[in-house]
Image (tube, one colour):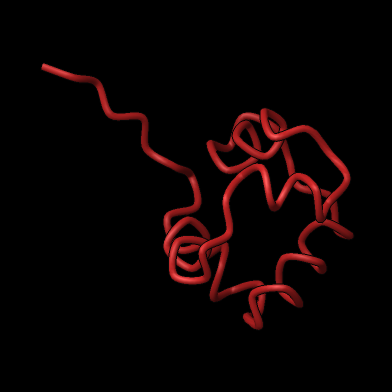
Amino acid sequence: MAIVKESKYPKLVSVMRENKITYVKLANILGIQPYSVYRKVKGRTDWTISEVETLCELLNKNYYELFK
């Protein structure tokens, strides 16, 4: 039986998939390492306000559509 690691932000992951945004692509946009994006999506580290603003702008969604 495989262990599936759930994302803390499933809405964000879904919208990223719809828009074909990979962790690597998002990392390049945010100016951080892909592993940092992975850790943020999993909820292991926090997003900065500027990162959240960039995500909302990039994905054309508001905070609640991505994170709540």
